Amino acid sequence: MSTRLEAWLEDRHAGQFVLGDGTVDFRYDPDAPDTPISLSLPRHGRATRRAAASFLDNLLPDHEAARARMASAYGARSTSTADLLAKAGGDIAGGLVLVPEGEPAPAGPALLNPALERDVAGRINAIKIDPDSWAPQDVPARFSLAGTQGKFALARVGDDWYWSNATVPSTHIIKPGRPELRGLEAAEAAALTLAARAGVPAPAASVLHAEDQSAFMVERFDREPGPGPLARRLHAEDLAQALGIRSESKYHVSARQVVALLTTVDADGSLVRGFLVQLAFNTIVGNADAHAKNCSVLLRPDGVRLAPLYDVVPVGLYPQFSQELAMPIAGARHPRAASPDHWRKLARTIGLDEDEAVTIARGTAARVAELNDTAWDNLDDDQAADLRQIVGRHAEAVARLRPS
Figure (spheres, rainbow, N blue to C red):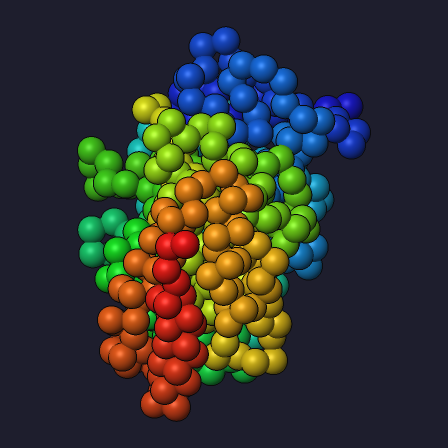
């Protein structure tokens, strides 16, 4: 017996996911938009056998415990992908809305449920106590977010917060920091602010304060202002979805694989160059956790664009975690080890001019170095000093690169 989910792409019926015993298939509607729902699920042509299942799996939390809490909170029959997304597919990553078979796209008046300050503070506190408690039991929210760290979605409408659902697109993601990791929320917000100031496209980020609680807050890049008070969903997918792999494989994707994928839809080279800028920035700030799910593309009617930078944590602030880059630079597994030869070798490996790759890396490093002294001022003095030293050392190493 199969379960079917209708997929609506920015208010048009795109097709149907058919979930059977261990298999998932996606069938495009003959009148679907030309924009594919995933690079791994082309509008015309064949997809790999696991692409549809991987696409859906990557819309859900990584941990089974978080999925179990989600099933309980939303009244899903099980933690299966089909049952969870049947309940929470109204507000997910990108522009899709998923509903059970036969149901129309959500329409009519928006279901506006206010998220009061005490509610937001309660959600933050609950996740800090129990990182698997993503989905709230006591509020009318309906959303699904991917990843390993507890988080929740909110919709900003005017000056007020509301819980998101199929009719109310979320506009922000709230991610409470782990209490044992001092300064995490401020460090992540500072890193994205530094990126934007250094010319690397990045969404607005800050630390949200609600009563006695705090959390990292970032604007969603897959939303834009709508014609009315509500936001409009934009379709996007992370690179794990685009490659057709499951979330547990996110650490096994190389820069070469990313470039090979992007090249298939990169008419002018802007996608590859933008990816290299993000790779250089992540390396310079020591974001060792920049894996395939931490990079996305926007799938628009006029083509594919690289999404802004997101999920940037200067891991060097927390030496208890691995400092090895999730995406090494041509074999260099640590930011300090990424020598001129490594950047040039990466360029040769991906088929890019060596001088251009060096210019991208060196230019990014120079802009970061110029801003580094003040970038971390919102952290505690000792952590700010540590990051200035760490990032300065990485930027200096990259800035010394010269075209061969």
